[in-house]
Length: 362
Image (cartoon, rainbow, N blue to C red):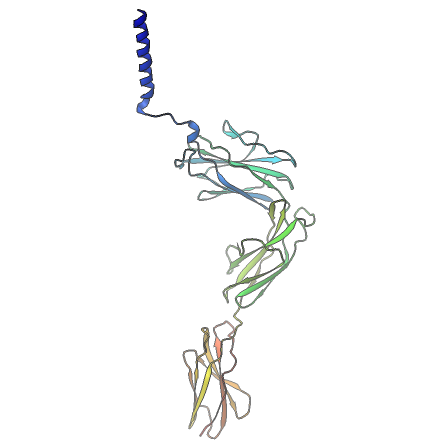
């Protein structure tokens, strides 16, 4: 009996093992639940603006096990205020929240407003009870449609600095394919205190009468002047300047200055025509010349003087013509001629005169 009972126990154990390994028709070890969690959000960054902290990050497109993540239903932003000298606090998820952190935003991707979502990038403007010179730390979590929440993102610490007031007396002077800007520093910071920290300036530009203004350089400049070159002549450009305060590794961007508008103009005259020749005949003088080498010539101006008198413009002819016949002449009179080139500028630039020729009408 003892032997039969032992053999029965062994068979039962073997059967249980087979049933466990063959359960649900699947083979191999089970997947740990945490490997199916969404991966953490990445690229968390922030800028300090006048009156707000703007946070942005990138939502994951993978799970922790590397498989695709297509069903994000909720993105949560958490914030923690830290006193000066206070040690950083770790971020841990427990029961669907980050323990010890204040929920700041719960963003559903189908209706994200007031968050702004572009592809996988999310932007949130934090204006909630901010205090100048206090440090705020942010983390982001992502939740899929089954309620599985990712680990917190890497924390981002930001000191909320008082931003500068707008720069003053912005002025613009247009040139040939360029605009030169000058301005005065801000009167102080938005909290009423004097400027402190390093102050730099970001120049923004827009073409035409309306539309967005975009930075014209990647980094702010230190001085209070800027030369914007390589522009299109005869196009109106709008400019503003923002002051940027840099202090303790944080940059705070102030409100923009008043807008100035100006239009670059072509101020460079074309090269003159050359090799002017005059052939007189009874009742006419035929002029020919070599075209200007400039590629923006619109017309040629013909000048005539009687004897040793002053030159007067008597005609213009399109740039395709390098011949002109003057029929308003008198027999026996002596004349001098010269030709200039005119460009296509709104107010045409005129070249210096060609060589001068003298003729007598037979």
